[in-house]
Length: 113
Length: 113
Image (cartoon, rainbow over the protein chains, first blue to last red):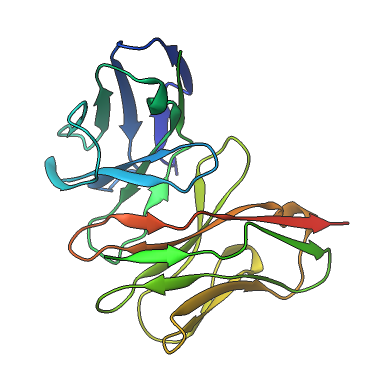
């Protein structure tokens, strides 16, 4: 079975630009979460979506937004990029409930110059 | 608020020896605890979780973890380390209400031949 997939693998942007990252969950999983992992740190929670509705938001500015589509795939958008947005962005999917395990994709490495 | 602490930045162990990676947690209510492993330039791989029940949890690749409620600890263990176990290990706790994972800062495990 295919795991969580993310695209693109890498991308380079300049300050002020906008970026869209994509995630496809494991088949049958209805919940998608996004995390930011800055080099040398643990992942930080950005958003959770379940059944196309936002169920949780971390401590990130409004420049960060996301959505989930009817097929449960998801996009993370970041506007007005800052140097500090350079990080590995991880997507995780799970079936639904609170005790469900989150399975992570390989991540998208974003570099902002 | 939920939090986890991984007191060791790095753990060094010789191949064939037992290994322990430490984690302590702080939660209100019942803890949902997880261990993930991250190899270079990769996403997080799920190892094991504690939700309820037996305090000794067995997971993937021969890893296990011991839940200790009185000491609020959830240490990762393996009886015999392999060089291929060398990676970055993260302990995480699930936030109540939705599926936000709060991660520790990570512990780098280095297994020498």
